Structures are given as structure tokens and as C-alpha cells.
Length: 316
Image (cartoon, rainbow, N blue to C red; front, side):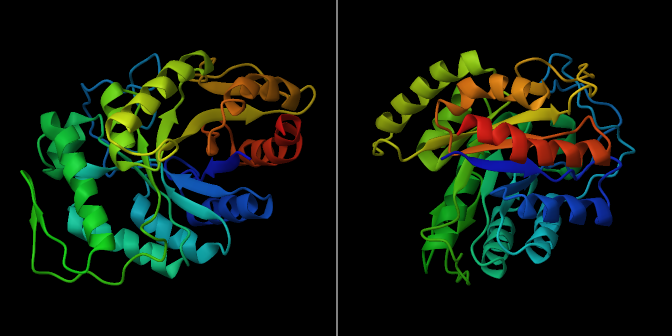
């Protein structure tokens, strides 16, 4: 059965203690399986980089908006919930030191009782790389591969050794290890062929972000081929999906709002949204994760409730 997830908004007007708590606890009460948060540290005032996940190519978050840091927020979510799993969707790997990040993620997994999902990506905003003095933007794919190798070694080996192009580790102990064995699931985000290859090599899931349903089968065939090419058994790397959604009641406002693009954001009544989701769910993702970024807090909560109580029963 496909597991359900929902984003707790960590940017914009709802990125405050009370809305975050309310959304996380409502998702757990409604039976959602996972919570996710997104990752930016700063929003530069001038951005030339193209945002790859909508038609405009522009990120919707202005530089003066609140944006809660995701790893700190995951600690808060761990303490605010008891059952639901959670993680970043996705953590931009090159932004942070790999040893410190691996330790922080292991700590979150330990203190949450093994509820962490580790969604990762390579990033897209060159200007943010520059501000953070991260490794070179042009090398972000190779850097991300190394960071994942460091993570896994630190999480699974008593005497980890990594001699890489960008980072070296030896003669250290790194404990405690994560509760989940061999380590928390790694969900590799990104819709490009390199991202799929990275998922096939390192991930337990390819995390597809707002990929229209008609495009998914070709990507999944590529994923399957890449899993074989890396010598992993069939099914070693599944896939998960992430979409925007807004579910309204009869007579509700189902007019699309910028940037609610068809195929990437599902808008309508429960029956209409279920119809849009059906071909995606039929492909068998491990998780279907949703966000409602274009509504008020009341609309976000309504969407969470209607998605759980009215849309999902139509799909199973």
C-alpha cells in the first residue's frame, strides 16, 4: 500500500511554532505516514539560477520570508510527534559538512526511535552555494556522491575510512549509530538522469518531484536499468513521489492559483483529485507526499483532512 506524506511548511507565514505544531500533530492524528520539510538556508536577493520545478523558473519564496532551517526543525518535529516518520524533501547535500550532517541525522534517528527518512538532493541555486561557501556549484553532483558515501560509512562502520576528492575521513569513532539498520532510508531527489543514476547507486528510493504522470514510466524504466547496471538486486531502489495539492469541498474554490500547474499540482474536489492521482498511485510508489503551499492555514488543514478522509479511500 502506498504510504502518505505531507509537508509541514517551513517557509512563509506558516513557518511559526503554532502552525508547525498544529500541522504535524494533525497529520499524525489523520494517519499520515510521513512529514517532510524543505531546505534553504538563505534566499539571495538576486537569483539568476533557474528553479527547475515550475514553468516560471523562479522560486516562490521571497528573500524576506521566514525560512526555518530543516535539521533543527526535524528535531522539533521528532519531539512533537510519537509515531509518524519525517525527513527533509530534500536536504541539499553540499550545503553542510558531511561528518557533522551525518552525526546530526544519526542523532535525530536515535532520539526519534528510528523514524527518520533522509531525502537528499544536489541543489540548484548557485547563489546560495556562494553565500554558504559550499563546494563548487559545478561539482555538486560529485560532491553529493561523496557526501552519501561518507554518511553510509559513518552510520555503518566502527572505523570508517573515506579517501575522496573532496573529503577524507580516517581514525575516528562516530557513535551512536542510527537506530534503523543498516541506516535510515535514503531518498534521492531530482528529476534528471544523473539524479536517477544516483538513486540507483545509493538510494532506497528515487524521490520524484512534481513529475507529470505521463512522464513517470520512462523515468522508472531508466531507474530499473540503472539499478541493474550498479549490480543491485531488483527492487533495491523503489520510488516515491511528491506533488502539490489543494482539495476543496463542494462549491469550494477550485480555480487554479499561481503556480498551481496541471500535472504538478492537483486541485479540485476529492473526486477530481483522486482521478488525477489514480495513474500515479497505480505505478506503485512507496510514498506519495503532498504539499499545500497556496492556501491559508485553514485551507491547508482542509486539504490534509479531505486528502486523508475523502481522496485516499477512493484510491485503495
